[in-house]
Image (cartoon, rainbow, N blue to C red):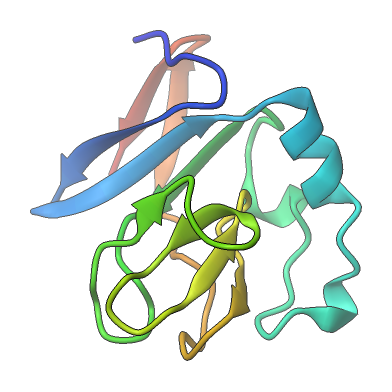
Length: 118
């Protein structure tokens, strides 16, 4: 269904949270401008989305499996309260102990406002 711009929703897939966020134009521009050479797990924003304005990631920190908090942390994405990992609005690890970006589950767009995860 329709997701408010800038506000993520959480759904479950295989018993785990999946974050789906309709990103703002500012978030998209900011994440597309990131120099991937400074990233621990280097991926461009384009490699992480099928549509610029919709991000779909697993809501599980890649450090020890805690659930990150949306809209928190230093990079405008998610913050893991367990050990302090910071993710940006593309789900990329930017700071803290997590070794990898938030995982992208298999998904496809059924139409403009419906996504099938899995």
